[in-house]
Length: 106
View 1 (cartoon, rainbow, N blue to C red):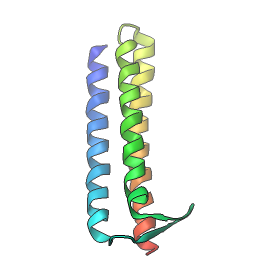
View 2 (view 1 turned 180 degrees about the vertical axis):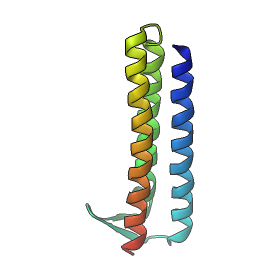
View 3 (view 1 turned 90 degrees about the vertical axis):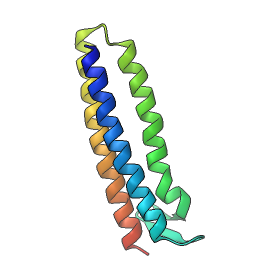
């Protein structure tokens, strides 16, 4: 079941690449000191653009540790892989929607 661990890593690498490249693009589209309007309120540029990718990176590290601890147990390895795959996809989509709302609300 080590293959599932590596596949989960690959999915997270792809998701984090999408998130960080979108954040980098959004960073270049905004100006220093600009406030971003989001559904949760108005927040600073740095927090609005980089908070979700940073939190997703920390979450991916925790999931990677869980996957390696449970690689020997077939049932749990499949469950952890499923959580990693769905989590990577959903967080990437959430971040893209977040950035769209932030850039449209300027």
